[in-house]
View 1 (cartoon, rainbow, N blue to C red):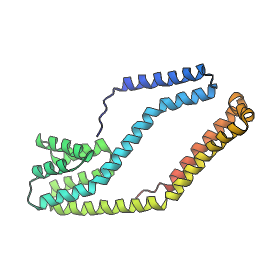
View 2 (view 1 turned 30 degrees about the vertical axis):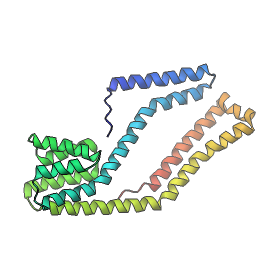
View 3 (view 1 turned 180 degrees about the vertical axis):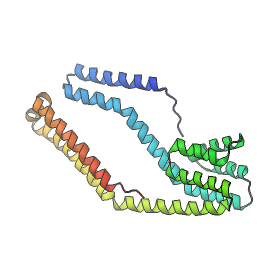
View 4 (view 1 turned 90 degrees about the horizontal axis):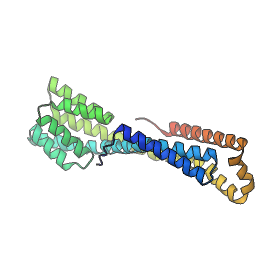
Length: 237
């Protein structure tokens, strides 16, 4: 698991400097104003996009690890392990990122924080829906009692079935996602081919206001088409 500690002010400063540097270098190299502006805007949006991508991957890895971790936890409890030793073995046997997060939960539990509260903090920090179910289960078990091992087994089976259903949905919608990629990349490839075959005609696209308007319209249509296809193939389970 990768921890990167950067203050908000420093991140904003680095982002602004990168955007300004990109714009200035583009103008020094003779690039059109529109291209320089788009490059600077892309550079300014890159850190937020990268953070969202890393967060999404981190959440997906935790979601994929959770069913096996819950089954192991239930097995340890059924074998007679107390809560603290079971959590210790569970955290040590799980790879990151879930192992590191469970280690933090275990540290809080040893300091006197109740297990459901510590798991609730993990739920709030990670925003993983499956952890919300787990935190609710632990709170109900603390208030009402019951067989925690059996409840964990049932939750693990439910999460595993849902992951299998999501994998099946992704396989069935793979063609739609591929079509979205093809539709998005095709205009760019056509523009590159025309730049090679008709450089004089394509030069007007980056040197005249009408060409800038056409490029802006193409960009808007590209984004709209990508968003529509993503909405069609993105099915919540």
